[in-house]
Image (cartoon, rainbow, N blue to C red; front, side, top):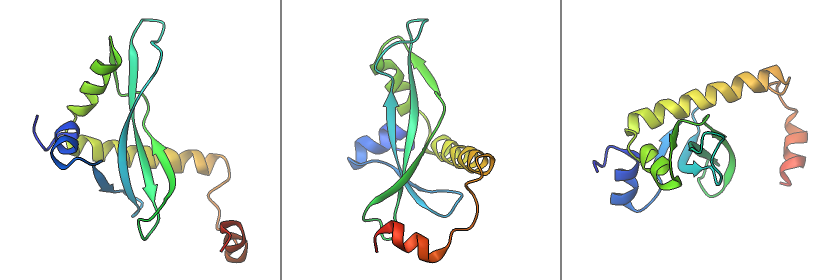
Length: 124
């Protein structure tokens, strides 16, 4: 498997692939496979992107894709995601960020926060 695929990269480097998102934040990617098959008997799989703090020392959030692939077994679904090119994974990240921003705006949660309240809620 080519190191320019998600699975090839993870195999060669023995770690999760990392990307800079369209929002300027750092993300690492994980593969999520459903534990149970759907009504068709297929297992869905998606990508989960963990957003990291500015210093990279802790996760501060995540975005995820819709189900991208299906397989007759969890291993088949995972293998299909692993065969995605890193370019396709980056595009999926940017799409997930756009969807997240859209839903945040619809929920009225995209407003500027009071700096003092942010400091209090972060516990710092």
